Image (tube, rainbow, N blue to C red; front, side):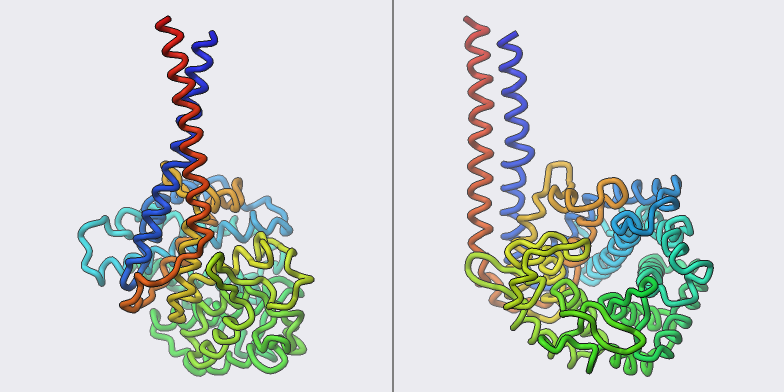
Length: 444
């Protein structure tokens, strides 16, 4: 029995060392080096994640629709209600960009994203239009949930349907897409200050700005001229709606008085900067400069985006469902979205440093799943949120300069890799030692 126990335990240790330590360490190092030598366009990391999760994501999304899993959730269950919808939209946003880049590059060395992910694309759009998945906004807004305010949900609906039609060319959802673009743009344009609520009494500019951007994208797809609306929509992000301390949009706002509530936050500014350049390039340039000065923390050891501006130490350890964990003042979500903000706004140095840390933190397993993003997701209702969000930020296109190889990687990355690889090798040594002793005892 002792020989059997030692052999079994030795095999378990060898498996754990390879699966959770040695394999991820080697893959992370390889992916970071590949990211460093990339010249332009889409990160290969985004392609890797997309290919790894496409089949499983499609099965999850289809299963959620079939089981009507969202129908009975409480309106206070943010991760259970909002995150599945976000996951589906992130998947379609990423697929659209990856497939476009695949075609433009004339690639034949890898499968085409919209082909191998065809079933997942259909499952994602089914989840997005599924009335059962909208049960929480129906309880907030009643039967008029597609006609009044509700800007967060309607933004995601427009975004998902736009990407779906762009990817597939299928116009089956065009009537509802066109109706939503026209009605929501009109409602936002006619509002007192260019603001609408997500939920009654809850107005977040972080959702309004991307709503304007996705309506602009949809307008281009559907040949609807929204130029004047987009220009007027700038009023929702200026004057009293800015945080006076940072001169950046406040995280919350009062839509009736047209004033910001509380400070600007890293997660909000990072996310808005992904889209602002599509709408108002000069404004985006000004915002990015202020963001870099007040929220970006970058040195040789670690790089990140603060959840609250430099000097607001009183808030530095607070976290919520939007920010994710805050570690030493650096927000996980703010830093993740900061990758996309940096890529879109041409800040290659910041994008590269944040990307290296994000690849490290993702900790890819031999199964193809990303360990840490999976653990930070809602395992019951939105198990792919972390992976689809990472895929989204890495799939934002960027043009990199010729000196890409000279870009620095934070020391933290190498330190963590050295520790984990050493630990993995030590566990492997223990496992092999147990197996060796069991073998010797058996022969004796």
